Image (cartoon, rainbow, N blue to C red; front, side, top):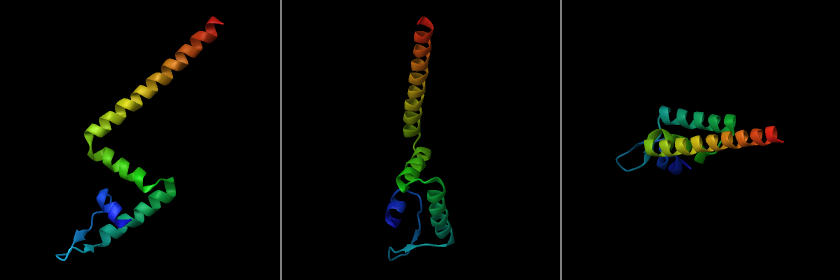
Length: 89
């Protein structure tokens, strides 16, 4: 799990010259707060990793924003057509 967190950029410990990971107070606090975040909001590590990636990758963020805007427009369009059908009936 620690390797996954490091690969996802969620917790990045320093490295000893031998290559061993060195977890200091910062990293331990990050791990504790990550555990609390997962418990409090019932989210998985993959969800948090994706959220972090959205913050780091402007292209991904723009693509997701565009997709979300499209789903909102479709929903509004569907509602509009539904109301028009009701008024016509």
